[in-house]
Length: 167
Length: 366
Ligand code: SF4
Ligand code: SF4
Image (cartoon, rainbow over all chains, first blue to last red; front, side):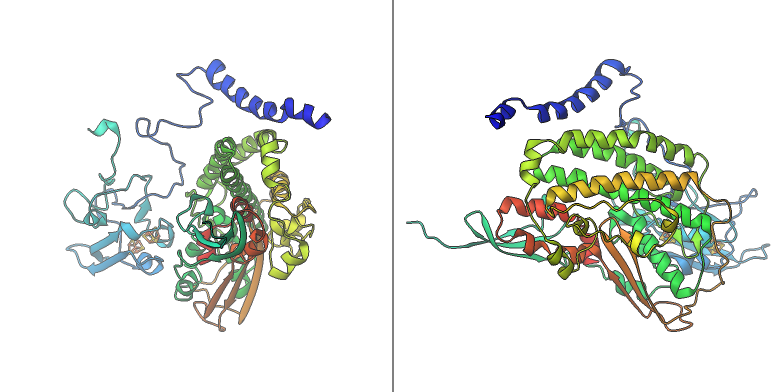
């Protein structure tokens, strides 16, 4: 009999529902729905997502104040990369004592964003930037280098712009 | 007209409740499972072999990708196994930070488990709440090492960088609200009659069977064996931490749920202690330029959220990369208990059994 009565009084279900009710109240009544302090979900493509300062994004080469590539071809990054996606060809440039990378190829499709290359570089010549929208339609779009048509290691990549603002 | 015979079916490999690409071959008599064999190997990438061909430093990135839900715990095991092999002592501050992140990882992994396991059984709401908190943990990961899932958090000899500014605030904010959140999950599940019906007495695994099969982690503790490597063979800074090892004796799915919920509370306690007692000092030991192994072989086991994860490394004295590398993956060994739990039960309970195992196929197949 007691058991039957307990079946009629669903206290456990009510307890669970109260959790849902609490959150419903917070979002629906108390929160200013414009400012959405209680919302966990962000409106991502419209509102750009924020990343932490240490975020590991795409590999980017840096230039110094004179606009010269900082890399001196010590090949440390090429050696440490666990997936061997960096290929460097050493060369000479007029009026520069240090070696100069004639070719610096980076195959992004196989990069695992571990930051070992940046860590190994003693010349601060490369960083991982904060870019994470890295999808592209063609495989060639992932092969980056020091040269290339609008697509190189110095600028943020133009692939993967899916925001509504673009079209 | 009706023939009475057994039917053989495949559960998976593309079944959403098998948590990845696990295929379970079942023979059914009506709805009763008479024979159950898990089939694995769909996600084999040869992690062990790859690590043998890379230097000690590079190997860590592969351990991230084994059990991607608890990458930090894998990193910790790898780093400590290597430190043993290379004869390096880690500074105390680094040990504390490692412990801190490891416990955060345990919370994140158990939250994933809670969400997906409850969803398998039919309680969808918890999933959304659990992932809300997991998001905060992943943000903490990202603030510390720059990546959310594949963390590569530690380095052999310590850490790459110290804690970032603002880290303590993030942690304290998380701790302040986390116990309320746990109560929320428990309000949704612990007393819920559907949840209880679906879990109590389901997929039993006795302590004798668990020990005979080598099962570790929450699975073993739910059977009443208080074996936790953090207590039994302390590593990192666990010796200085005050925490309990929660156990239950029922050995069913509900007991495993209770153990994991209690473990999350203990993890929060450890994080609190790490934060309060964080020592000052360097975070990286002095390392030789080239890492060469000092001893011939090591086995180092740590307590990952799933159980005992052990790294076995063989390196000849002076070698640059491991000669042989083997991972004792907790998921792989815990999965062997699935036939014991599922045979004789109903087919719907196989899903509950797989869920309560908390497996990640990336780690099982490696
Ligand atoms: S981030 Fe890692 S995988 Fe990518 S290029 Fe650098 S070292 Fe290689
Ligand atoms: S480590 Fe730095 S300086 Fe050396 S080759 Fe790589 S980018 Fe250039």
